Length: 379
Image (spheres, rainbow, N blue to C red):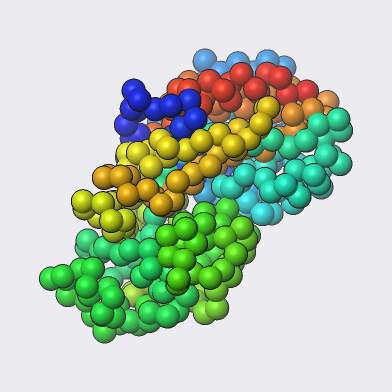
C-alpha cells in the first residue's frame, strides 16, 4: 500500500492520511525498542542512528487520534531507541479527547483527524501563552469501509447507499440498492450490523463530511460533529474497536483507517463515485483525491481543505489527514526541546519513510517541507 508519489503534486496538496496513536510502547504489548511489526507481519529495525535528539529528555505526553496509532507506534519506538532516557506517551483516545486534553494543558501535543475548529483555537490561547494551537499535517490516507459478508469479496457501494446503511434506512444486504450496485454478486438476506465509533473521532467527522457533501438528500446530520450523530447501529471504542467488531461479526460494516483493514484482513468497499470505474480504498487512490487539497490555514497553521466530491478516475474520495496539534508559541519549557525533536523526526525523511512500511502514506515533499520549516519555530 505504498503511496505513489506524483511529480505534479502541488504545494497545497497532501499525501494520504495517517492512522492511530498508541498508549505508549507498553500498551503495544512489546518492550523491544529495535523492531516493529509492519503491515504484512514482518519486522522493521529502527533506523535510530539518523534521529537527532537535540536536547530531548524526560517524558512527553500526547493524546488523540486512534487512526494514527500504528504510525505513532513506529515513531515512538524508533525515537525512544535513539534518544536514551526519553519516553513519549501517546494515548489513543480519539481526536476529540486529544484536543480536550491539549486545551486543558494536560499534553504537549494532540493528534487529530480533523483541523481545530475556531472555538478550539480560541480555547487553546489560554494554554498557548502568547500563541495558539496550530495544525501540522503528518500523514494521510483513505478511510476504509470494511465489511464481513461470506461469499462477497468485491463489494461496491455509493455515497447515498452508505448514508442509508449507516442511518439504518437500509438493513438487509440484499436490499435492491445494494443489488443494483453489485450485479452478479450473491447477496444474502442477512441483517446488516453497522458499527460506528463510541468516542469523539475525527474519522467519524471525515465520514460525516463526505456523506454530507455527496449524499445530501440521505445524510442530514451536522458534518462538523466528531460524535456519531445517527440513531441505531452498534458502537465500539476507537478504530481498533470498530475493526475488531467488524472482523468478528458476520454481516457487519464499519469505518476505520486502511491499516486496520490490512492488519485484520478485512475486506473493504470500493466506492462508485461516478468515475469510469468504482474506486478501491488504497493509499495510491487516496493520494489522487488528496492531490486537490488546499491549505486553508494561515501563518504557521497548515490546515487543509479536502475535495470529497471528486469524480476523477481512480481518486478515492473518503480520505483524511491526521494533524499533530501544538502551540506555535507558549509551549511548556520543560517539554519544548523534546516536542520539537520528536516532530522534527516524524515530519523528516526518516519518520516519513517508515509510514509506508505500516501501510500509511508519507506526506508529499512540498507539504513535508512546510511542516519541517515550522517545527523549529515552535517556542
